[in-house]
Image (cartoon, rainbow, N blue to C red; front, side, top):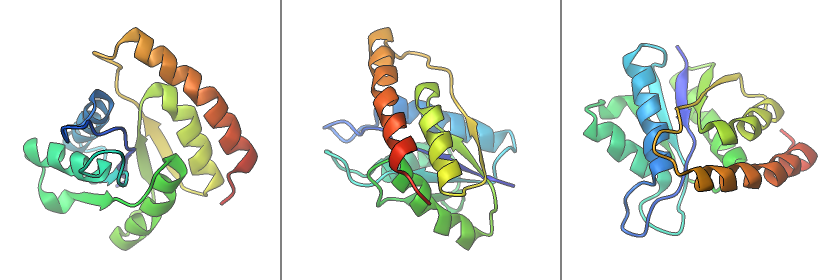
Length: 157
C-alpha cells in the first residue's frame, strides 16, 4: 500500500499550521482512514517559524488520533523537489514502492513534474480548496507558472 506524502506549506508566526497545511494534512488523514494509504510522510523542513512543516503535520495527525507509528517525518527540505527527494529514503526504509502526493491543485503540476524527474512512482490526490480566499488561490496559481517552468528547465534526478 502506498504512503501519503504531504507536501509542506507555511507555519504561522505563532507556530500554528497554515490553512493549506491543515487542508493537505486532513486530506491525507482521510486517505489513511479510507484505506488508500498505509502511512503518512509529512514533508517540510524549517521555515520562517518553528516548528518544521513536517512536525506541524505530525501534530495534526496526532490530534486526529492517528498512531505515531503511522506518521513519518521528512523535516530537512526547503522546496517541493527536496520534499520528494528526501522522502524517498523513508519510503525505501518502510519498504513502500509507491506514493500518493498530497498537495493543492494549483501545486499539483509542479509536484507531478518533480516526481517524474526524480523517478518517484507516485499519483496525486488534492483536497478541495475549501476556505481558501480566492485572491490567495489566484496568487498561488500565478506563482506556480514560473516555478513549474524553472523545474522543467533545471530539475534532474
